[in-house]
Length: 333
Ligand code: UT7
Image: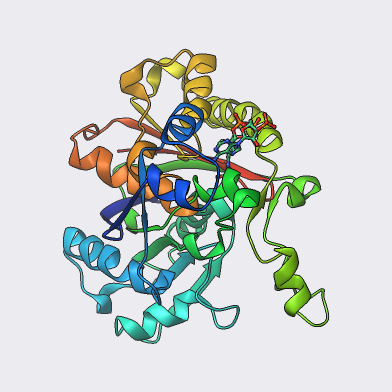
């Protein structure tokens, strides 16, 4: 009889840049207020990188902690998956940069750009490599520097106060005791690509970037917040139920749900729809804002630090964001 392999997280780490930005910071550039930001989003503060830091830089401390927690060294890692929608450069990927910066052996490094669902997509890829015995230890990194894509004028007030910087890393390895990832479910709907996007620099434009593009603000992240919100509150419950059904589990089996930290009102609506209690849904958006693909693993690190997960618990992760893309992962902790 062949042994059943699953992929389990054996080490986690996160890094929140030291530069704490509270809500009052934005009032010097745009018409906004601490009250509006807290009431509409739940965010009290967020972190921004120092000038010149890219996602591969802020990932380093997160990876170091994850390696330490897994009791592994860079030489034990077989493959890197780097999830970011804000890469250091267009070419090459941030995975190549971290391979060099942290002296990993010449292993493969794959960048993925699945926005706020990036960590779920990355877990699903790692899971396939581990289950097929291609790789033993896979490093997943989610790292984002959104602060440099923000329009700090009134035109950007619906995004600038929300998106922020942060990094997290997870190390996955083969497990033979039925622990770890039970399933991943992934979706996209490109029809809504332009509801949350950065239009330029774009390879579809010639020139890719010029003064007019910059003047028109096409290089800033743009979001149709109401439309994104509407889809998010539908897709989160849908993809969580899809995952539960697949595993023959019920809502009451969820020990902890960590949704992508997009907006506290979205999380509360999802909680209400699924009739989950406060202890079943994790939130830390008040401290970090929306850190795109880093938000789920940062929250997972904090949930563990706060002892909100015990061995054998059913953990549900769910993301929704640009693409639109959305997805869920269920893990037996
Ligand atoms: O991570 C990927 C997934 N992202 C999300 O899921 C985000 C989804 N969307 C949202 O979280 C919310 O739509 C926002 C927080 C972006 C906006 O909240 P809202 O309650 O949907 O506000 P709204 O867009 O309906 O705007 C209400 C008002 C508008 O003014 P008028 O037209 O009513 O006069 C906005 O111009 O609030 C205004 N507004 C602001 N006011 C003060 C927008 N941003 C701000 C601001 N400060 N920062």
